[in-house]
View 1 (spheres, rainbow, N blue to C red):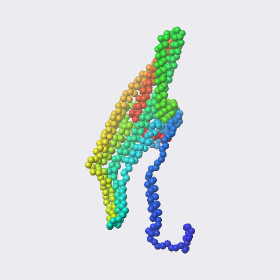
View 2 (view 1 turned 45 degrees about the vertical axis):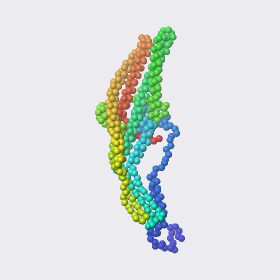
View 3 (view 1 turned 90 degrees about the horizontal axis):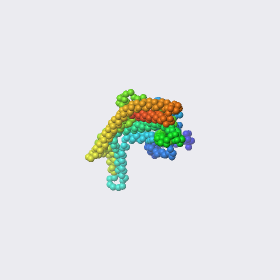
View 4 (view 1 turned 60 degrees about the vertical axis):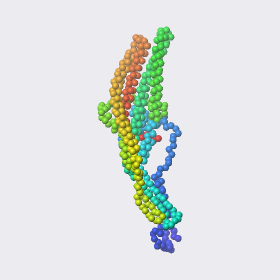
Amino acid sequence: MSPIGGTSSTAPPIPNVPVRGRFAFARPLLRTFSAALAGATLLGGCAFYHALPLAHAPDLASGLSGLHTQVPGPGPGEAPRRIATDKPLTLTDVGLLAVLNDPQLRVQRGEMDLAQAGLLQASLLPNPSASVSYAQLLGGHDITHAAWTASLTQDVKAILTYHTRVKSARFLTRQVNADLLWQQWQVAQKARLLALDLYWGGVAVDLSRREVAMVGLEVRQARIAAQAGSLALTALAPLLAAKASADRALASLSLAQLQNWQALDALLGLEPNVRFTLAAPSLAPPPKDLGPLLAGLPDRRPDLVALKLGYRSADEDVRTAIIGQFPAFLLGAAWGQDTGNVRSVGPTATFDLPLFDRNQGQIAIARATRLTLHEQYQARLDAAVGAVKGLAAQIRRLKRDVSVAQHAAAAAATLSSSAQRAYALGAIDQRALADYETTALNRELEAVTLARALGEADIVMTVELARGLPETRIAAPQT
């Protein structure tokens, strides 16, 4: 025998056999290989299980440094920006941080994947149906072969409704995306309102503490005077009442501050004891003309866009239901052989007789759903336009009130300064000085309250007009 790769002069000649017979021994191997290849191909298209374990601990950051701060660029090809958390945060930055880190918005990843899965399901045609039967010979006369039949059918009705079903699913996917964007806007608005309330609430707390300290000093001095006999005890009662009222106001403001801080920390994914510095709020310039902004509102506000997409999806569902009133129709072919070796082949058709169900129920449901969405869109559009016009009137009124309150606070502060000089000269007593100072503080508190109301109206106005927030959805970063 020659070595591998070598030759031998004494090797027997290769017999002259047909090619088919020559490689007959390899047929089982080829069939095995083909079956393995087909099995591998089928398995390649299958999904496999992967575990997704739940967390065993909360995922709350202990400070701003632990938050996601990178905001994607506003347009394709534009560089992202990073929010500077080592500086006082503006209202806009707080809103964007909430969008990037709110634990509730993490659910959006699953909701968007679910919508995409619905689109994938709608784009798949039903598999054709195949059937095979075989009858083994057992006995009898004139029987020469086993009997077998095979058939292959396809649902034609599913093909007829394919186009409208896919269009409906695409509109639904886009509707989900618009709804998720509106959710992000709502979270950003809530975070900005909380930040605004915290800023002005801090100012109000400082003013209330000054008032409490001032009234407390007056009470102590009045008690000393009463003990010395230079002041009647009846004069002390109103001071004690004023002190109790100031204490209650300070306690209420402090509790509101604590609750607002905890709510904002929750939106940002922070532990409830985290505190940071907020920049002074700045109001957006008012629009000069509301007409063009209101005209373009249906194309800018995500909630209105979502309702429009939902309506278009429902309209495609009506088309699908109308097409579906035609009976179910299965078309295919059948092959067979009987025991007498008679072979046959031919088409097969299976269809429903539309005697009772002509899809009337689905058509009625689809039309009612479309009508409901039609009216919901109109109602939402009317409410949006009415809210914008109402907020515009409120902002104009609040601006006048803030201006009046600020002038009144400035005048009261001037009188308080004059009273302090008069008290130093002995022209007025401690009680009169305290009244002037308390009045000045109350005027400042009134101005702060109105400034807060104006800021809240301004923030709500920007959302109602679909201004000042990202126009595309910011996906929450993967954790």
